[in-house]
Image (cartoon, rainbow, N blue to C red):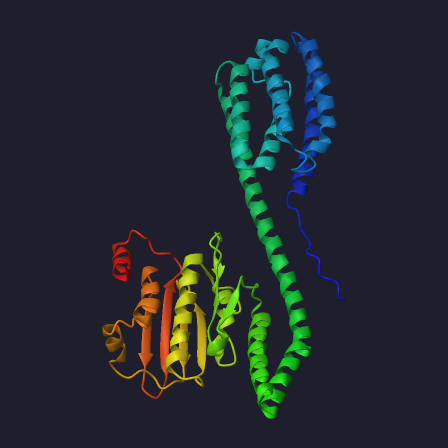
Length: 414
């Protein structure tokens, strides 16, 4: 059995976490070095020594916490921010007022930015804004007055952390999109392999049964007809790459001309219209569809598929058992167009108006009524002796239910 292709996942965050870990170690050594060079100018140097005896082991012990997003827990972030804030607020007790007024560094110095950046890489720009604002408040309290250099440094950290947090969010979204694209590519290749296998075995057998059944006749001819329908449906499925439908029901008594698909009510995202139209394909119904998905809102897809089913039902009822039908799906930028055409005798002029007058509202209600409620339209063109063509259009953007035209359409439908 051939091996399934594995999807390679890339992580854009891993380099950020590694850089952050290195930054924290280097800035810890930098802060200790600054203190060592100015040791004699501190009023209470033992406070600074005690703080660094906590900061250095904390930085080394928490390196595994900044290895990835899963290890970087909220409890760790809270403790890390508390270490930074404590160092800032202890600075006036350890250092001289003169050095603080001249813009001297706080005890943690630029190590504080590492704590803020950890919030940014972990939670994005919102978390970064919270951490940087807290650090900014602590710096203003430590300085006593909002001096220009303090405000400058505070704004720099605030803007930089938020920008990095936003970039991280965009990178994560891009990573998810790339992973999804790779999964789709792998699934497409697997589907192509299965399609080749099916073409070399199942489809050939079905085609042979159809041909042999037609030659033998009798019950074998009926079996051949059914095999032909299954061949068409299976060929459309493997070539279009559609997901399995929830339920396919066919009217065997009517020659399996019209099939229907149910869309679960709990689906929140768009539905690929092709999955609802493929079951209509058969020996006498051909389906031409785009190679890419045709997404529509579940309600719109359900109503449009039902309108196609109603149009095919009219072909079966009025065009005769030997009539053929063609379904063409077009995915336009603003709308989806589905055309249903048959080679029947066509509709005599005035017949639709007469049917509506007699209360037979198949076209008016089942087709036009459904699409009108969605803001779409249905155009029917029929020439006696040349068949009938129904063009169904549905906008991709759902129409507001409060629209007066929609309300009036629903009232007429009731």
